[in-house]
Length: 226
Image (cartoon, rainbow, N blue to C red):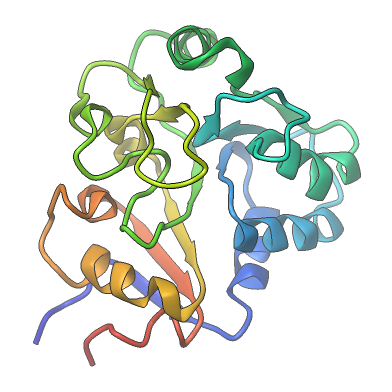
């Protein structure tokens, strides 16, 4: 029988489970985009009373202005930051474009962690229907980057078709704890490819290793073995 590479937790409210996890995090916490993470942030805002012991970072961003409808920062601001007085968030400046925006975020990481590979305490990750995570898409050069911590992605693998900025795989793999939050039957195939199959660049999330947790609903878990 195929064994899973993750600690699997199936729940009718995986966003709520994620919110409870994030409410207990101290240190450097990385947040991501997506509708299910948005639901988690809304619950987190009500659960966490103080924010002076955590700093927020981003997995990736679209190269748009921070007030744009496609901005991950805008979503996190509206669902979490506007309800979390004093929270410190290091946003990716997508409006600078993929090259300059990535270089600036790399400098911001350097200022916080020094020249070594950053080790984030908690990282929330999503999963696309093509099994991408962050903005690491199948076949894109960013997936093979091993030296830089942040890179630009000129042509994303799915809509909205705007350039991106993303953390690289070594940074994701260095996190002390990485949690995938996935819901919906449309993600079931991607979940199986990412977590029940062998590591495969055609399913970028399958290349994430370390201390991994998968929070999903029964629909997203429906094609997992066992």
